[in-house]
Length: 198
Image 1 (cartoon, rainbow, N blue to C red):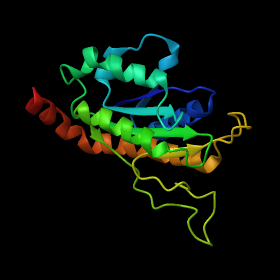
Image 2: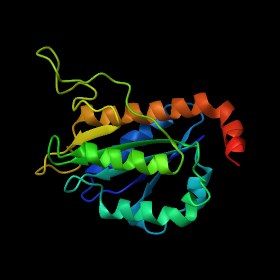
Image 3: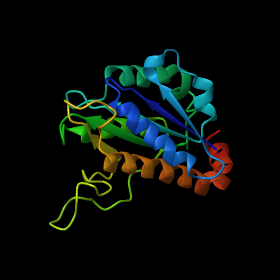
Image 4: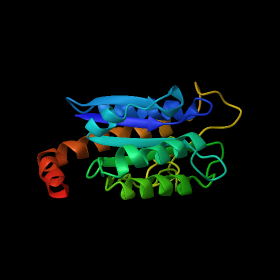
């Protein structure tokens, strides 16, 4: 199985989240994770077409996904959307910002809508919110309390080697593992679903 992680990272923080997601994917037997940074140049569209799942990641800037990820979304129209080449693939997303909230939900909604327009099947987090009681901790998984995808927070005065915190990276790792497990669950039915859409 192949899970591609398509992401943008302005300062390296979102790249760390992408790497943690890939680590989780690789924990599922016989699953490969491929990291695709949109800033690295031309995208391998054929590799994405062969992927069983695509996870999208972006920093949240001004309450929105980055311009580079948006450009990737727009470029996918001719290469993937017009023939619905990503139909029935599993999709998920993550986003990072310098503010604890930072309107990150808007970025995840943008990714989920994009996936829906491609006929993809969106996977969110199945975790209860962490850090939400007097006995919980910022070290909890899903400490920012998101269900649509992973939200992470990196203090603006900290480098990517220390931010986002470990709990956020472990949450991204959890999402990667979850996506790979769901792909495995869907695998016997994938060919039947693809044939229905053909």
